[in-house]
Amino acid sequence: MLIVTADEIPGKRITKVLGMVRGNTIRARHIGRDIMASLRNITGGEIVEYTKMIAESREQALDRMVAEAEARGANAIVALRFTTASMMENAAELLAYGTAVVVEDDA
Image (cartoon, rainbow, N blue to C red; front, side, top):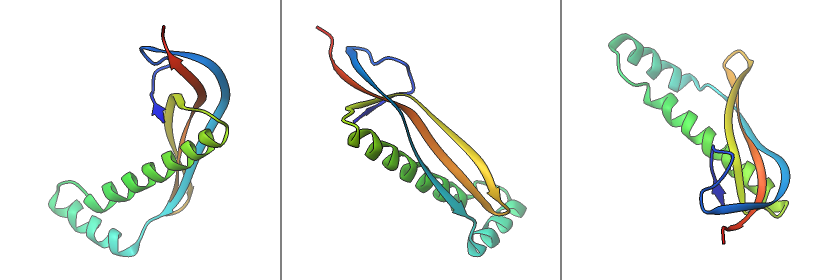
């Protein structure tokens, strides 16, 4: 599955637009990660526990979006975007969305 943030894919022609597809996940913080993050906040540096959690969330949202696109018969997604929203204290949603399309090689 080709996935791009652009509206077009160089060397490809969009032959069919199948509509918006999305995938999301909602994650809550973990007390163990919070303790480690607090310690890193004091000493400085990257908070790797949260970096890992966000990366896992992003991949899960992408996987769900791709599954929806494949179910519609798409072979590409254009105009990919990510957004986040706070759902409640200590929990956030990560949403991936884009437009499912069918592309073929430009002649």
